Image (cartoon, rainbow, N blue to C red; front, side, top):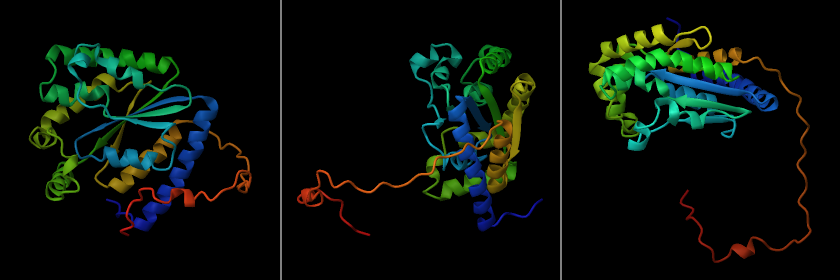
Length: 261
C-alpha cells in the first residue's frame, strides 16, 4: 500500500488539478457542453469530500451539486426518473448527483423501500434510459466509491464520537453496517446490469481519502477532451469620482455585527 500523502503534497497536487478544472470549466461554457457526474458508493466512502474537492474552486453556476432528499408522496407517484430530469444540465453546465437514480438499486432495494418488481424493472430500464441520455449529447460519467469494511467502521465510530461529524450519520447509515453483504450483492447486481460501454462505472478505492479525491479529479479531466482558452488580460479600473459623497458616514446609526474577533 502506498504511503499516505503529506498535507503539503496533497494540497500542492490538489491545487494543480483544481486549476485544470477551471480550464475545463471555461471549455464547457465555451463549447456549451452538457455533463452529468453520478457519485454513488458505500456509506462513509467519502462522496461528499470528493465532490467538495471538485467544486471548491469552480463556479457553482457551472458545477451544480444535486443532493435530493427523500421523495415526497407526490414524487413517489411519479415515473421514477421524473424527479431527476429537471436537474439535468443545459448547455455549459456540469451537474453532479450526490446519490442519484441509483438509490433504487442500493438503499431502496436493500432496506425494502421499493418492491422487488420495481427493483427489477429499474435494472432493466436504467441502461435504456442512460443510452438515451448519452445519445442526446450529454456526457455521463458514473463513479462508485468503494471503502473497506474496517475503514467504514472506523469512520462511523469517528462520526459517533465527534459532535461536528454526527450530522453525517443518516438513519440508514448505521443499519448499513449490519447489511454489508446485502449492499455488496446489490452493488454487484447493479454493475452487472448497468456497467455499459456508453455509460461505464468507474470504481475509486477510497480508504485513503486524499488519494481518492486526487485520482477522481485526474480521471475526470481525462474523460472530457478540452483545451485551455486564451484569457483577456484584466485590469482593475480606478474608482470614478462622479457622484462622490461620504458613503461611510451614511452608515452611521445602522446595525453592525459586534466585532468580537
